[in-house]
Figure 1: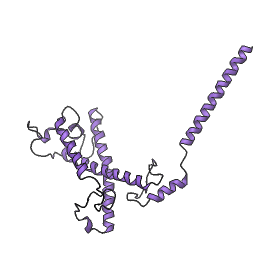
Figure 2: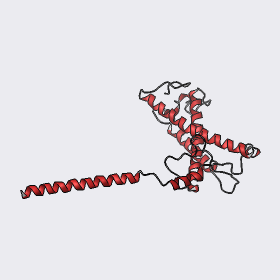
Figure 3: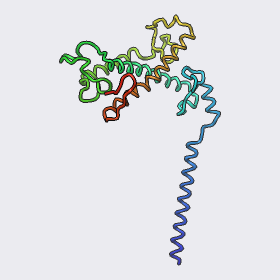
Figure 4: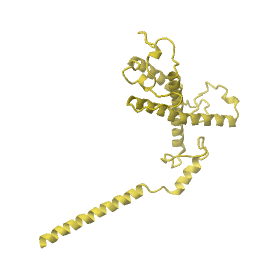
Amino acid sequence: NTFSLSILTIQSNKQSAMKSVIIASLLASAVAFAPAKSASKTSALNSFEDELGAQAPLGFFDPLGLVADGDQEKFDRLRYVEIKHGRICQLAFLGQITTRGGVHLPGNIDYSGHSFDSFPNGIAAVIGPDAIPTAGIVQMVAFVGFLECAFMRDVPDTGNEFVGDFRNGFIDFGWDSLDAEAQLSKRAIELNNGRAAQMGILGLMVHEKLGEIGMGVDLPIIGQLS
C-alpha cells in the first residue's frame, strides 16, 4: 500500500508539473503575441502617415512593425533599400519581357561566336546547363559593382534632396524644372512602380521554375515560361 501511494504521489506531482509547464507556455505565448501598446503604435503612425508611399487604400502599412518605434533613421534606411530594390526590379522585369519578346542585343556575346539570342531567357540565362559562361557572368557582376560604387549611391554634400536621390550634383534630366507637386508625384509613381516590379519579377521567376517541373501555366500575353 505504501508503495502504491508513493507511485500515485509521483504521478500526481508529474501531472501537476506538466500542467504548470503548459500554463507557463500558454502565458508566454500570450505575452509574445499580445498587441503592442496602442500609444506606441499611434506614435509610429503619426510619425510616418504623411511619408511618401503611405497612400490609399492602405495608408501607412507596416504589418511587421519594423518602424513601430518611430525611428526616422531606420525608416529612411528601409526606404532607401526599398527604392533601390524597386529600381533594380523594374530593370529586371523590363529585361524579362524584352528578351521573351524576341528582342536581343545584336552580334556575339563572346569570341567563340555565341550570339546573344542563343542563350535562354530568365533564370536559365545565368543558372543551368545552357547558361552564359562563368566569365561572362563575372563581367556582369563586376559592371554592376562598378555602378553601385561609382554612381548608384547617395554622395553626401552634393545637394541631394531626399532618400534615393542619386543625382549627386551631376545629372538632372529636367528635375529642377518641375514644381514641388510634380516632383512628389514623380517620386510616388517611381515608388509604386518599383513595388509592382518587385512582385512582377518574383512572379515571373516562380512561374519559370514551375514550368521546369511540369506545373507551368499559360500566362496572359506571354504564355508559358520556359
